[in-house]
Image (cartoon, rainbow, N blue to C red; front, side, top):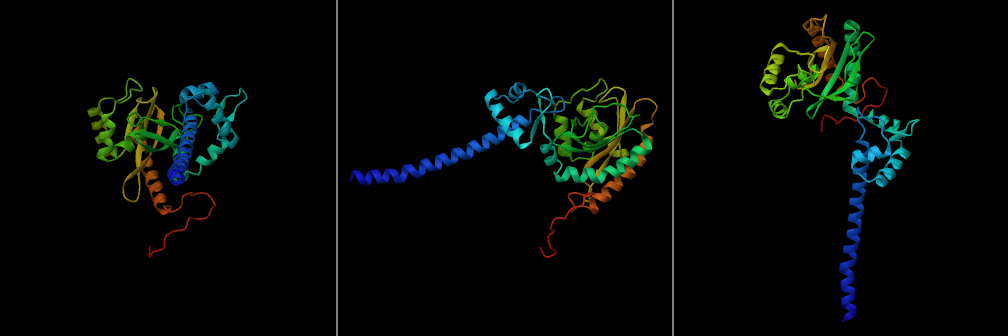
Length: 292
């Protein structure tokens, strides 16, 4: 009888223990991955270089854990170290990021038209999309005569204080506008619109005239004009605009040319909808047949 009880207990306990160990391994794997991503997330535009202790503090993790993860990330190429032995985002991670199809596709389509716009105005030219409730800058062109501004490729800024952001927000759904206006609006300068009802009126005016304007709302000394870029379903997918010195310019003068180039970008987007990497020599993905 004791033998049968022992065998029965083993039949129950052993599979349970094995399942528990497998579950723990899966949980640990997810945990390590998320912690590594948290470590990478400590870098941003204001913190491009970090020491190990700074990374650990910003990720709220023990230094020993940060050291192990940083070593693995460095070995893979996601992190590199500069001459002062500070960590920075690695080249291999940048290479992987360049394969993200949506921003890469939109950027490659927009760049020739951005160049056309720059040739006309010699000022900062922006192409951006909405990511959650922020503006994500996909491309920027500037020159020696361009005013210095905060935006950079890959950076995020508020929507209500930027030209491309207002263009994106004004033509977004009512739900997105309501969600945006329900949050606290950051005051970037003394000219930033931070009152929800006033912002709603500004967005309505933007829709009425077809382009957005800002006057020193993001950075003192600069102003901007931008237009929306639409897809085949007439949904706004991007903002296309310029930033100029706040003196010497009639911003509305640039709106017709911006609108013309935005329409050309839309046409190219529609024509190259199935090409994830326009502008590059590569094999096109297999497309589904007409029958399904």
